Image 1: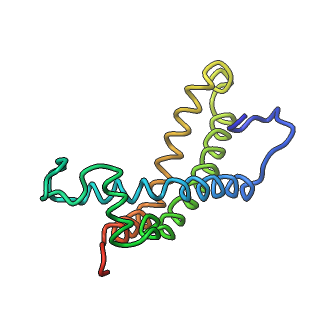
Image 2: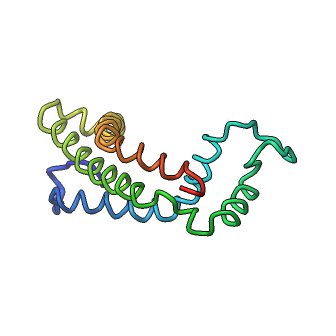
Length: 155
């Protein structure tokens, strides 16, 4: 079970919590990066998206994938991957550690009914706070990643 619970036999250290978040971020980012590249290219495209239109550089997901691979090579689908990995590792690590911190504070400071009867609500609130903290830490890496992905060839 996630979240702090003093009845649990095994408690992970902050390093182990951070490593779990970082590893989940690495795997997720590696698999999802091509979709992120496509998303950002579509977001940055000025022309409206219309099939068959000569104005639109990217018209569909398959067409955009083929165009990027043809013009820039397969590696272009992982453009900005290293800053994205920094983002994912940092985000996952900070999120896991801060979620454990918040659930432990709730357990220690608030009435026990919040941690037992209202556990899903408590975890929802702690998870939201953990996400906010992670976003604050990771925003600079997200800006760098978006700028790297958005540039075409030549750089």
